Image (cartoon, rainbow, N blue to C red; front, top):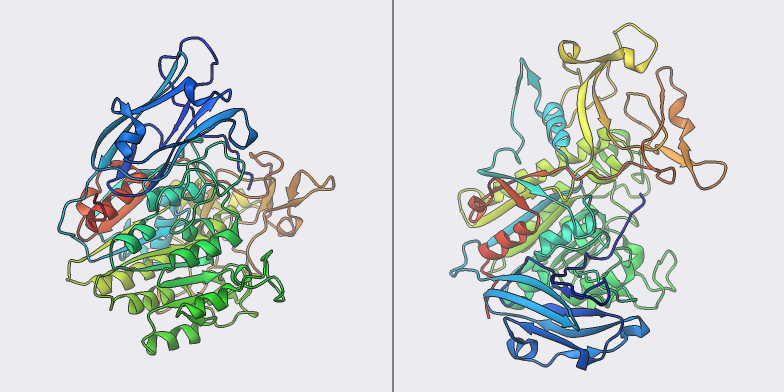
Length: 580
C-alpha cells in the first residue's frame, strides 16, 4: 500500500509580512497532555534565524521559567534552513497553557490542556483490544458466521457487543484524513495526534527518524510511575505498528531493528508475536539485523523465558514464569482461517503457533499475579492485513478470533469490577455486506448470482466448531462482501482456499499493477478495473469512524463521538497515571 505523507500542519496566527511560512510548535494546537507525562517541546523557525531574532513564551512567561529548565536553541538545525528551540523530556502540572513563538512580525500560537487524573486509582487492570482495520462489516459478518441469523435476528451476541458502553471514534492524523496503523495506534498509546508512519513522535523537520519530538507512551508511564506489569500481544510481527506503539519513538514505522531495542529498553513483562529475525544478531542465519546485537540473549539475561511454540508458551505459564518473550513465527503468525480450515500460509513450517485467544489467556495468567495490576494490549492484526488483500473470509475469521479473546478477558474480569476492557479498531476499511451469492440463481456471471434486498437469502455455512468458527465456508450460499477500494483485480465470489489472496501483481512494465490472473480463471470470475492509483497492489484504509465498546471502571466515559486520543485519556484516568 502506498502511504502519502505531509509534515504536520503549521499552526500560525497574526502573520504580518515576512515569510508566508510561520513557526511550528510541538506539541501542536489543542494537544491534551497528561499531567507529569514526558514530552519533547520543540519550536521550528523558518529561514534559520538567530536566537536574538526569536522569542518563545508559555502563558506570557519565558518558556524556561515555566518548564523549570533551560531550553536549547540550535541555529540552522542539521544544516537545514530552519532553527529550532528544544527542551527534551519536558513535563507540566495540570492547567491551560498558551504557547507563543515570535519571529519578527510573525507569531504562532498553540493551546494545550494538561489534564490531571483523580486519586485513588479506579482500575487495577486495563486490557486494550485493538482489532486492526476492524470495520462495522467485520463485526456484522462475524456475528452472522459465528452466532447465526434467523428471521431478522441474530442467534447470539459477540462478546465485544455485550459491553456496557459504546462510542464512535474518529481516526484521522495530523497530516491526512485517512490514517495508517502507526499514528492511529500511537493516538491510543500516547494521547497525541501524529502523522502517517509515526510512532511516539510528532513529525518535525528532523532528518533522522529517531530524532523527532518524542511523547511518552502508556507502557512507559505504567513502568515509570507504578509497579504495574505490562503485556503486548499480537499475531503480527511484534515490531509492527500497533504493538510497537506501546514502546516506540520513530518517524518511520519500518525501523524494526530500532523498535526491538525499544522493546528491550521498556521491557514489557510479556511480549508475544512474530518477527524473530530482527532479534537475531547479524551473523545468525535468517537474521534481519544490521548489527551483531543478539536480543534473544539480552532478553534471556534480563530474566525472560523464550517461547517459540504454543507448547513452550503453555509450559512457561505452567511453570509460573512472569516474564516471557514469545516469538512464534519469522513473519506474521497465521490467521484463524489457515490455522483452523486450510492449513495454508506458513502452518506447515510453524505447526505449533498459538492464536490470539491462546496468547491472551497465557498473558493474563502470567500478568494477573502482579500485586499492582497490569496493562495489556492485545491486537488481532490480520483483520487489517487480510482486508488489504481483499480476503474478507480470513479477515472475518480473525474478527471471530478477537472476539473469543475478548471473552477470555471478560471471563477473567468476572464480577470483580477492577478491570477496564476496551475493544476498538485503529481505523476502518471500506468494506460492506451487500447481499448474498447463491449458486442456484440462474446466469453465467457472478453478478447474476448476487441476491439483494428480498433475494439476499441467508448463507448456508457449515456447522460451527466449539469456538464458533464455521467448518465450511465454500458453500452454495455465501455473504456478498465487497470493498470500496481496490487495484485492478478479479473477483470470484468464493473464498481463497489455497492461501491468502493476492489481488494484484506487477505488470510487464514493472511499475503498474495488474489483476492477478490466478483469480481470473474461474467460471464466474469477474474482472474489475481498479479505482486506486496504478501503483497500488491492495486495498487501502478508509476515514470512516469506528465503533468502540468498553466495560469496567472508567468505561462510562465512552459515549457519543470522540477522537482516538480520548482512549488514552480514559485509560490514564482509570489508572491514575497523572501526577506532578
